[in-house]
Image (tube, rainbow, N blue to C red; front, top):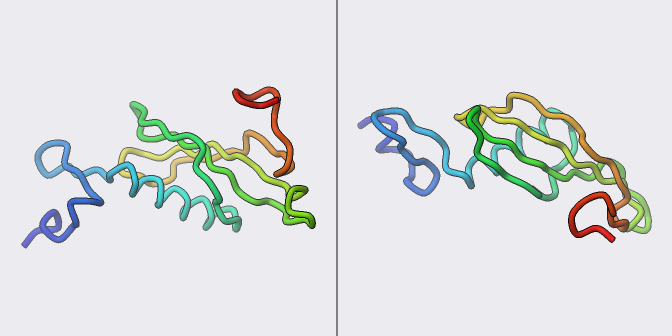
Length: 110
């Protein structure tokens, strides 16, 4: 029995021949885990997710500094780039803000 028969269909998809790529939900899960391992901070939310020519690009929000009250905690958004197999290729912080504040520079902010 080969590896493709052992892998659940819900977590993998085939794109032709024996070339397998992770399904989008698996990419999301792995990106959160890999970013947490590198930064030491837990990923709270994936705010954007895009399949690109080079793999995947995500924006993930993390708690950088817990404060009381929680609305004053410092949050950060990281751009995370993954290769086509879902392995982390790079990341960078693109924004830092207090949890309780909206950002007027971003869509939906007031």
